[in-house]
Length: 83
Image 1 (tube, rainbow, N blue to C red):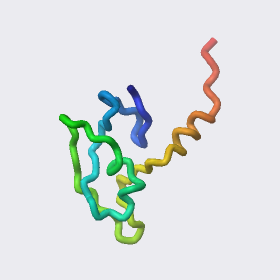
Image 2 (cartoon, helix red, strand yellow):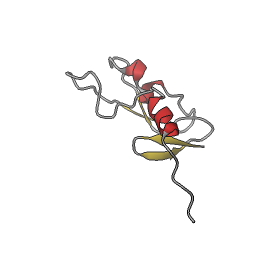
Image 3 (spheres, rainbow, N blue to C red):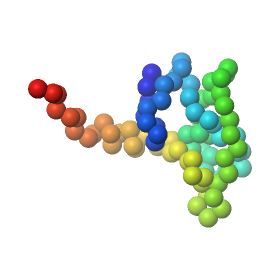
């Protein structure tokens, strides 16, 4: 399964996140961040201790769990087929 990401497409194994997940339980944005909220792969998951910016309350690797970017991509017109 391929899914969108801010860095391009990523492959998921069995529906698990193929990303470095966040292990910062004190981050103020953790419930809004995909890196914290994703379902971890039980065998191969990697973790990082991302630290939020003190002013913004989220780190530079913040990845919103909001489906809005995916919905917006679905609404954009598809390229016409090649002739």
